[in-house]
Amino acid sequence: MSQSSHKENNTPVIKCESVYKIFGNNALNLLENSKGQVDAKKFQEAGCIVGVNNASFGVAKGEMMVVMGLSGSGKSTLLRCISRLTDATAGKIYIDGEDLLAMNSKQLIELRRNKMGMVFQSFALLPHKTVIENIAFPLQVKGTSTKESMSRALEMVELVGLKGRENYFPRELSGGQQQRVGIARSLAVEPDIWFLDEPFSALDPLIRKEMQDEFLRLQGVLKKTIMFVTHDFDEALRLADRIAIMKDGIIEQLDTPDNIVLNPATEYVKKFTEDVPREKVLKIESIMDPYDSNNSSSNEVSKDAIIETLAESILNSKKILTVIDKNDNNKKVGSLDPSKVIKVIFGR
Image (cartoon, rainbow, N blue to C red; front, side, top):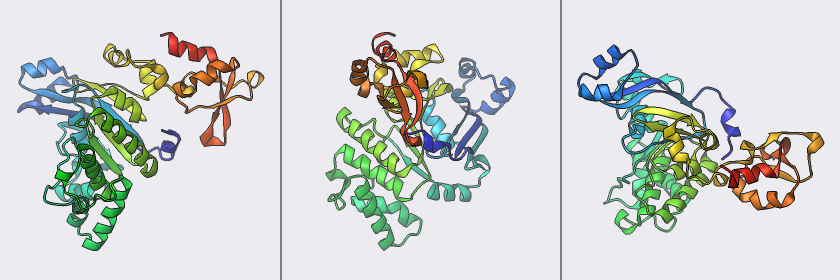
């Protein structure tokens, strides 16, 4: 996905500053006494469970940030804090510059209705309503007329590829189709911010890949600001502009997929990256040298191309290639020595 569109506005849509979520009766006292240095084991001995430990980051407009980690790492808890389904124990969370934790319940309802869309692992469709009625439901809750909400729902049916099934009931749909209805329903309210918590993990691998493709297509059209939770590293690599890898409530590394693969920050992150075929993940941009006009050729490659897709033609060229930025009028931005590609594919 193109990163260039995310730079328009420097103010993050979502901003977290030292967010903690600790479960247990004595959580706040323990946190205050720890002066921010939270040791999960000590807290556990004191009867508390650390869900999120000192999380600070921003998510830019139109960016897809994937939060990943194994079960119990705190990724879903972090998402629930940012949507305020769970109240953070400490820290600051801003949505479009507004202090989320200072909002009263009326402001929170407004925010959720008008700015946030949520999709969870369980589809939670209303069994007695048809596809189109399920999708229109959140609009009707907002007070939209039946005619308008049905018309909007029909647009969403087309967007997620369910045309012809709008009058089916959930029980008449496959798992993948049900998940599409869930996605359409959350998009019907035109959220600026979209939270997805393991939305595809209940699906079989083939349907899952189809849904990822569909999701990337939708994001290409809609350019939402997205936080997407998964425990699947391959899924994170496919979808993310940036990935936050969590362990025991701590964000171990937050970076672009290629940087995480090339430069894992901790041993824990390295374990995820060890078996990743780099050529399937890394873009030309991540291995190019600065542009050298004295050593350039007419053979051009895009900086955003995944190495694997061009590997054969690059290795056959034997010449230094010119790297261009297709988003910037094919500007020459780098040079690529084919030997670098050989190193990525065959040498660790």
